[in-house]
Length: 185
Image (cartoon, rainbow, N blue to C red; front, side, top):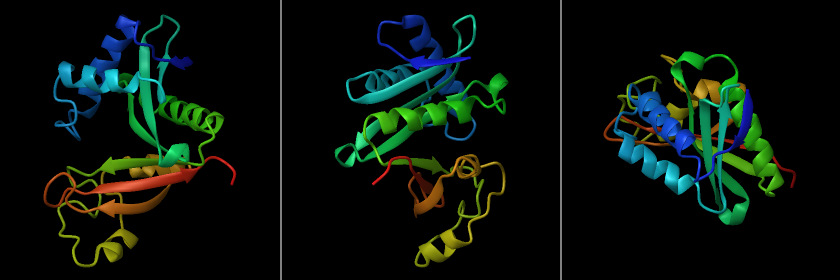
């Protein structure tokens, strides 16, 4: 496996990344990229100057996974968005490798922190399907991963939960926020 930049002129890889987005999110966030057109727009946005867009490819040059990100807060913080790994390649360390590469890319650009949002649209956590108001932080303090929500993956990589946005995707469908420091102060 090799990790490299995704570039605008590589139509084959762009098309593969689009297919990956649609397929990779159809179960847990189907509205995110419901079709190839929406996925291609997301990829196009990731290919502009100042963004990070990296792919993991196999020996034949086929995409195994894709990660993107954009600078915020004058480059001190980077949003990791999105991360997707081909279904038949999951749980093989590809996502972990892409995140490690992303961390290195952020450090090279002088960033200190990476943040990521992990939506809970299908009640995968104890926050899903719940009215989090008025005690949002109490609910967050007792969060449980019920069915393989991505926050568990990010925690294994050193990310910590830093917040939640109740009802971000509709009533009872929050967005869980995680962050990790990758640069020195």
